[in-house]
Image 1 (cartoon, rainbow, N blue to C red):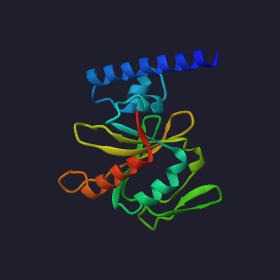
Image 2 (spheres, rainbow, N blue to C red; image 1 turned 90 degrees about the vertical axis):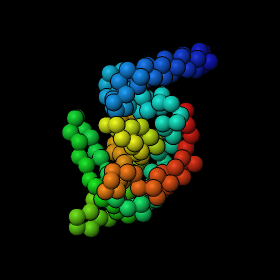
Image 3 (cartoon, helix red, strand yellow; image 1 turned 135 degrees about the horizontal axis):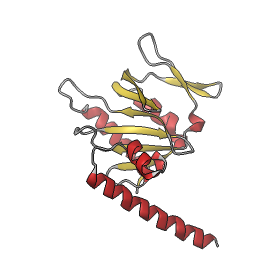
Image 4 (cartoon, rainbow, N blue to C red; image 1 turned 45 degrees about the vertical axis):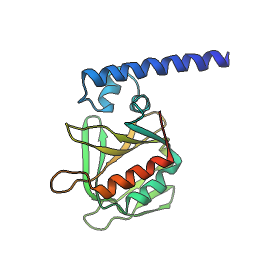
Length: 180
């Protein structure tokens, strides 16, 4: 019976991969969250079905190490999206430290500040997918149900180009994960 369940899961994953490929071909402007809504699956399921050149998948237990690394990258864009509302913060991600069950961002005045429940992060995706016609790269943190908790996009210079040192650091993080 276990082998039958495994085979069924593989067939369902292959079907989802085909559906995602079709959506990307027909509507390349769609974000993973929008694809997930159309396909009636979690955003994580969609991201897991993206082509390997677009996404590297990482276990959530590496969230703290990744956040510590990103705190040295300079200005990035951190996004929290809930029920269609999008909150953005552009600036350096502050350093943090664990305490009281959270990873506490130690932002100064004008910097991001907050308390992240990192044990709720099950998976992380390093996503490289154009956004509004521009090159875009993000570190996306997902909970156990496959919903995005928050994401961090690489920063841009005054001409709108991705900071080269951030792209190099992002690409180094790929060594922590695997492509589909």
